[in-house]
Image (cartoon, rainbow, N blue to C red; front, side, top):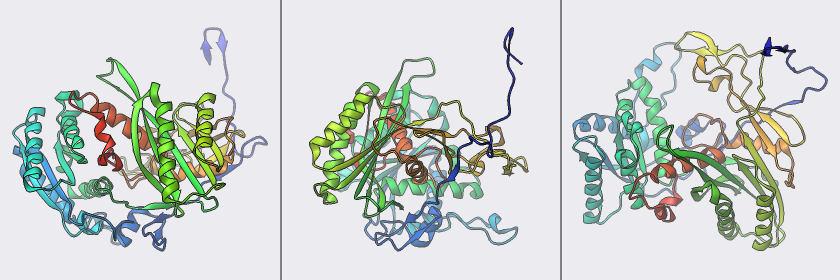
Length: 486
């Protein structure tokens, strides 16, 4: 073939396993989910553990009867009532049990029983039409009601339309509604009217995922993940970004989100600190987040001088030498600790691909063929390209959604030269672990939660910034300590 006229090229054989210089292949170990503070309730399946044991905070969660206001269009109130009844009380699908052995019912318990609540109180506030102004009037009624009755809503359900995705800023009822509730420290869970009309055999899976995010937004902890117990203290910071702008051709700004995960009591915990800033300000925001997190965690975990601390940074871009030096300098100022550092660039855009010739595809129910994920490596497989680079698959054949999606691309993990902790096998396994720790879905994520949550924070705060009355200072209150962005 010709690359350019007069410039021919040929395709050689792929570098394959069995070649003398092919890297050794590793598989990340399975993740253990924890469902009790005592650590005795564990499983390798997150949804199965929730159904069997209940959430991690089942014994301590409050309020046991959350108050939830519902914002919906007046002409759709009946359908929304039916949808929320199924959400709260569960839905059983007879069709799932017709062929072969009985199949698991994913949402038979409903939100109340699956998450060990006593009850849920709901009250409707109706928008006269689908405009932002009508939604705003309904929100004001909901806020006036809580003031009159002397309580605070724990959550707001908001019915939206798929068409809202095409609206911008003050014209988008979902964004204006979310901005108003977040300003009052009330998290929001939205659902589209097109979704609630799905048949029960599909709706039960939608409800199951919505219940997971709702419980997390209410402040509950569905599960934790068992951490490596060999060191005293480990903190992982994630930097993710999103481009925010009006339309594809409008002016766009890159916003950076920051997520923190730390190891406590032998389990990985998500920090209550979350924020997003313009890309030009992210270094100062990262250092501030690092300082605040360590100040809080060292008090709660009773850090002592000379304790071993490991700081790991997952970033959407390569960290500069000056940024790494700034982190080290700040740690010297915070206390006398034995600190290891690992600065990892999580690269999505790179020239490498992985193929598993033994993978002949998995069953696709639409085409009725084994056509999904052909040649895709197993999820969790990784290989070391060099002392500082690891290629890792976080989307296997089973995770490919459609045959048209083709072969998924692996992630490239690149370790910064100033890292003092350079065990790339440990770091790759940890990235895999964090890809199993999202409370946004039961399915494994194609990115570690450190990056995924950071991108969600950046995208949502960037979109809220297009609403004229939005005040980012709202995130400094109690709402900033919830998973409001799920």
